[in-house]
Length: 146
Image 1: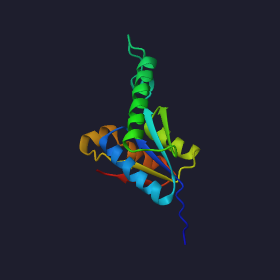
Image 2: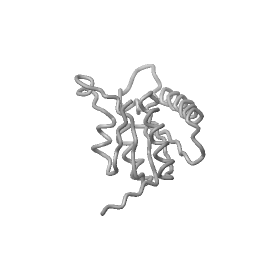
Image 3: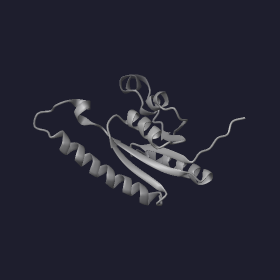
Image 4: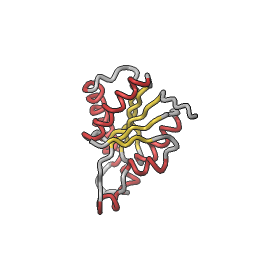
């Protein structure tokens, strides 16, 4: 017989409607299990994503993106009435890798994330963060479709 304990739930967000739905879903699960909820947003590391671009300060762009993410996370906190038991974090780098690292570092029991349902060429070319997290994570991943 297996004993399942869910005390920490991670919700990675890309601030999309699907991610918000996953957050609402995770909030309900957290209430049922009396679990702590973590919300993580990953800002793409532009230097590694696109390399050097003349005339642009990638640090400034990343900083601007982080500030905007902070505003959006605060908006989510207010919209979903996320209390002090919800920890929010913003990381910079590859989203799937950062999610897996965050899960390990914080001893997360369950990851709840949106699945956008990409298919065809788009899925082949870019893959899916959810799919990558499924491969990288040692913990269960609940993919929520809207």
